[in-house]
Amino acid sequence: MATALTQFNAVGRRKNAVARVYLRPNGSGKITVNKRDFKEFFPTLWTQTSITSPFTVTETEGKFDVVVNARGGGMTGQAEAIRLGISRALVDFNEELKKPLRDAGFMTRDPRMVERKKYGQPKARKRFQFSKR
Image (cartoon, rainbow, N blue to C red; front, side, top):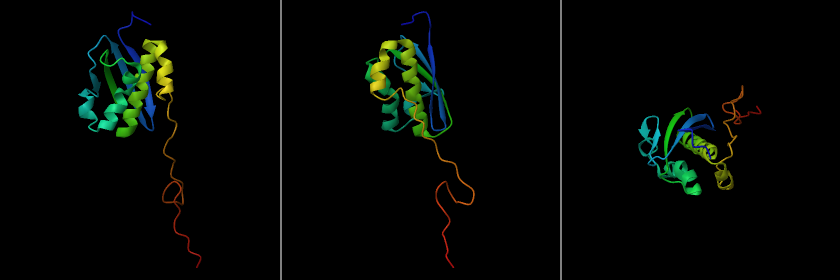
C-alpha cells in the first residue's frame, strides 16, 4: 500500500470508450465525470450502480474522490470503462483488493467490438435480398 502518492491513475476501455480515472484517497466519495457529477452525467440507475460497484465489492465506499475523463462510445461503454478504470486504480492503491475485484469480474477488459461493415453488403452480416430470376 503506497502512501506517498496523492492520487492513483488508471485507464479503462470498453467498445470505443476510453476513461482516464484519477483516484484520490482520503476523500469524501465524490465522483466527477467530465467536470460534472456522475449522477448528472449518467441519469440511469443501472449505470450509476455499475460505476460505484467496485467500491461496494471492496467495502471502500466514501473513502475516495474520483475524477474521470471519458471519451468515445456511448453511455454503457463509458460506464463500463469507468468501472474497469476504478478497479485498476483500486488495485494500484492496495494489491489485496485484486482478488475480490477479479471474482466480481471487474478486472477483465471486455474485448467485444462492433464488427466492421463488409463491401457488397448493407451491414456487417446482413446480405442484400437474393433473386434467383
